[in-house]
Image 1 (spheres, rainbow, N blue to C red):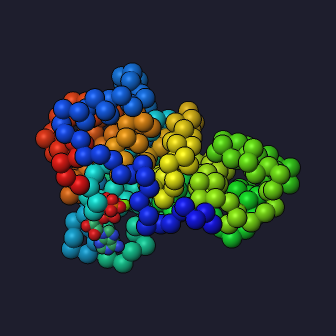
Image 2 (image 1 turned 30 degrees about the vertical axis):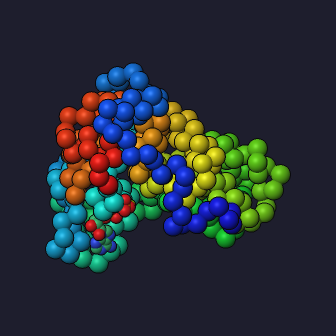
Length: 291
Ligand SMILES: Nc1ncnc2c1ncn2[C@@H]1O[C@H](COP(=O)(O)OP(=O)(O)OP(=O)(O)O)[C@@H](O)[C@H]1O
Ligand SMILES: [Mg+2]
C-alpha cells in the first residue's frame, strides 16, 4: 500500500486557504470548468421530501433535489451535515444500521429506489459506490474488475477480458497495469487502487456513481488524476461526489449542493453557487468563515 495513503491524513488539496469574501468568488470562479448554463438536462435521480433518522436524531430534513443525468453533482458542507448519510441512502447501505428510518421518496430513472421489495444486488449494480479509502479486494487486479460482471452475468472468458480492459481504460489505469493483471491489487499505489475501485464500479454498468471524498486520502498528483477521470466519466455516468474541497467541487462539478445541519440550503449550477450564492450560510461556508 502506498505510504502516502493513510485514511486519516489530510491531503494537501484539502487544506485550502481561508479566503475572505472578496477573493473567494474570484478564486473559485477561476477553476469552475463548467461555465455554460445547462438547463437542458434529464433527471436521473429524483429526491422528494427525503428525511432520515438515526434513532431519535433526524439527520436529514426534507431534502428535495433533481440530480441530472450525465453530469457531476458535488455535495459540500461542514462535517456532520449529512452528506455521507445522503449518499448511503441512495444505495441503501444506511438501512443496515439498526434504528434507522426514512420518509420521502427517491426514484432512479422513474423507479422507486426505496421500495421494500427492490432487489438490492440489482440496485448496487445500478448504483456504484467509491469510498474515501480505496478498498480493493485482496485479489488480482483482473479479478477485482471481473468480480462484479461474473456475479451478475454468465460470461465467456473473452467477454470478461473485454469488460476488464474497457473498464480499466475508462478508469485511466489500463496502460499502467496491462502487463501485470494477475498481480495483487494491494501492490498498487493508493491513487492506482482508487482508480481500480472506480474500474470495478464501472465494470457492472452502473447508472450512477457515488463517490464519498474519493480523493481525500490521496496525494495531490493522484487527486488531479481522479478529478480528470471524474470529468471524463460524466460523459457516460451520473456522478455524485462528496468533497470537503471547494476547489475540487469547482473543478469537477456541474451542480453543487450545500448541506448544513441536515438541510439542503442551496443547490444549483456550480458557477452560481461559487460566484453568487443566494444564501448567507452558503456564502459564509465557501468563503471559509466556518466549517
Ligand atoms: N451510524 C450512525 N449512528 C448515529 N448517528 C450517525 C451515524 N452516522 C452518522 N450519524 C450522525 O448523522 C449526522 C450526519 O453524519 P454524516 O456522516 O452523514 O456527515 P458528513 O456530512 O458525511 O460528515 P463528514 O464531512 O465528517 O464526513 C452526524 O450528526 C452524525 O453524527
Ligand atoms: Mg462523510
